[in-house]
Image (cartoon, rainbow, N blue to C red):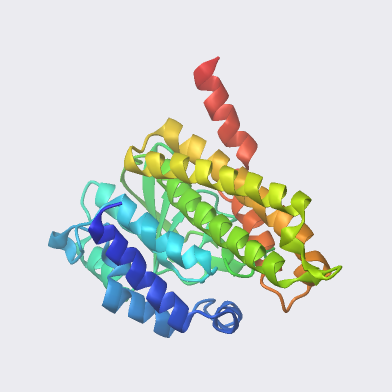
Length: 313
């Protein structure tokens, strides 16, 4: 990772530590818009989070996909709800259109507008708060206006989804493969959240005493956590390489690996925390829900595995 990305990551981590405590995350996810609007403003003004993938000509920072992945990953570590995921995809969709809408791009880059990309109209990330909505079907991009929105009650309260029905549609260009980009960004979120979930579990086993000893000192738990660490680090390497050299194949591999790893880590975290893990007051249940909710978003792991199998056979 470059020095610039290290600085970007550290800046976002500092904001998260200060403004996105467990209590703040719970308050944000229960709010009317589903995220902390003041934190979103800070991210846009101090970090330029919403401007990272937008060229300078359109009011952006002129960064790369990897920059957005770093920010999304840091936010995912604490399950911070923000509209950055959908907004970033909407910006990439507009940039790929035949005639990019400069006004819309500038508003998105400034954080003044929220974006969303539709892959499945029944489950649209940021769909309930988005002003700029673009559908991608693998072939064409279509801008939706006059939309009717119906929010979903989802398993994961930290990521809201909505059913979106367009009033009018306008073809704006060829789909550059936004589904693969979404898979890469989601994988970056998943592996970062898995890392944090594992760290919380390790910390808990050092503090929880049973039979006069911290449970983390028991050989069986040491082995399980060591196996998880190896798995997380291996998946991190796969995701980082995929983001550095994006392709349909690398996106499918990163998405499958990150989904499986995060689900495995979250399941073990519940087991090693014991009964406290499934109480509303504890954060591990939120990581468990995020792991399973994210795994099903944009297609379950088996669909990405089939894509990989089709290239081998």
